[in-house]
Length: 182
Ligand SMILES: CC(C)(COP(=O)(O)OP(=O)(O)OC[C@H]1O[C@@H](n2cnc3c(N)ncnc32)[C@H](O)[C@@H]1OP(=O)(O)O)[C@@H](O)C(=O)NCCC(=O)NCCS
Image (cartoon, rainbow, N blue to C red):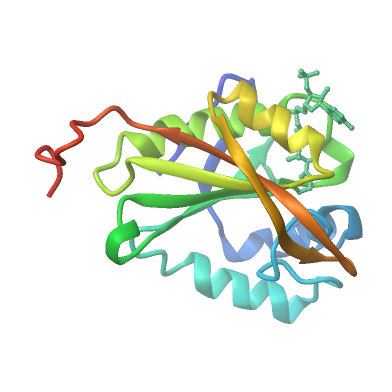
């Protein structure tokens, strides 16, 4: 599987064991960790990479992909599938190695994965809560067509602080009765 993006040399693909050196290089970064959930540890060790490869190799209905730029995995992007009443909602997330920030890579990756995921039967809604200080990620989501739905007050405890997060979502157009769904 390979999801192209609009950026030359940049596409999304499954993680591979031989991505480990690149994963450790780009993921072991406090500025990346500071904007993510506890699923992304710091420091980021070899054991953490092994856990990640195990999760990513058994995705079920979820999508766990590497952002590949010029042949190297430089970040991750994915959608975690929901269950029960949230079975058509996916939790959308991404990160990029800091040395590559500011080149439009996250925007290209998020736009491509959102389009790909919403074309799959299991995803009608993609949502992404963004920490209040993460203006770059809010911009990425806006450029990828997500809508700011509201502020979740004091919803996140991160880096010693209790902060608000901002909920962004992108939805596929389906009938409100749910007839088209299985
Ligand atoms: C957020 C992140 C993915 C952005 O990656 P990126 O490839 O640098 O993003 P892009 O270059 O596609 O776009 C960034 C946008 O944010 C803007 N931006 C960057 N820093 C900003 C700031 N401090 N305030 C406002 N806007 C900012 C850029 O100008 C750009 O917008 P523009 O194209 O309109 O000028 C990257 O910084 C990252 O991995 N951060 C750590 C993990 C993370 O935050 N993940 C998302 C969790 S919700």
